[in-house]
Image (cartoon, rainbow, N blue to C red; front, side, top):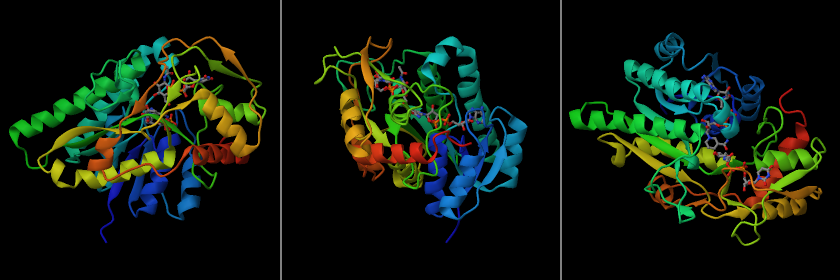
Length: 349
Ligand code: NAD
Ligand code: UD1
């Protein structure tokens, strides 16, 4: 069997480390580039422990063109999975330049290095954040885009750049055209079932699931439920939570799809990766308490600025074209998140 080398940018991070695990288990060879700005190299040692296979790690910034050029000349890369980026919405409002520089400029440097090395298959971590507010709560890929914060806009800008890049190749009918999958994640939670890798947020978490876990383990005193007066079934916000392992399986399917007929002449296509159903904040708390037997101390607080009442994916396109679907349910997500939290109360120390 031919072993294909995949370059994973941001491979030491939460989703990237799960992707490395899944790639190695699917017999790909994994090369990681990460500047460790929001992660620790220990995550990659854990990936090696789970899979019994090595990861080739380069500590470098994707904005360092020379470093990328060296990696492409040393490793015979066939495909790039691009996770590297900053992802905190609030921080992006305070430091927009940092977000545009890291995410947008970083991607420009990466795709230039890819073009120079004639590596033109890319799976990109986009986000449901690129969608604007809509009267519909179930999003399909052709909904108008209209992100409302710098983080979301950085993702939408990158999508535009990648679409333009692909369109240019299609017009000039080049031999090796860009083949790009834009994967729009809904709300990834959970962890690998081993409990060896998981989400290790810096400081106080912004997102619901790590916050709930840290309240349950006693690191944080109380969860604030942001709003109970939304027009939803119990008044709290509804989101489409997806197990991180299901999410990264979608990436493996995307690599396979890039080899298929749909991408033969080159294409750049977006796919929603979500379960296609929503859960409320209270449902998450109830599930957590039932599955783990731990009490989650919470209070109702005012709505968080910028939050939508309800949104979830229409994942039909990914189901049909990537031959992918979620396999894990909310109980699995919660129990795996808790397993990781229990085994690593201080994260990767
Ligand atoms: P993460 O912060 O855990 O991982 C990102 C990794 O990229 C980190 O290891 C970080 O050190 C690295 N990195 C950042 N900037 C870099 C740079 N300039 N050069 C090299 N490495 C760099 O985040 P994550 O949750 O794993 O998210 C991965 C990707 O998925 C991100 O692009 C994020 O925007 C996107 N995404 C995440 C979510 C989510 O809920 N976690 C949702 C939608 C989209
Ligand atoms: C947030 C980001 C989004 C990003 C996603 C990644 C914002 C506005 N949006 O989405 O850009 O792609 O994370 O997963 O930050 N909640 C509480 N208490 C908390 C935390 C959250 O009640 O302490 C509620 C929220 O109001 C929301 C739900 O839990 O209804 C999920 O929140 P969160 O995990 O932060 O994800 P999103 O807001 O969907």
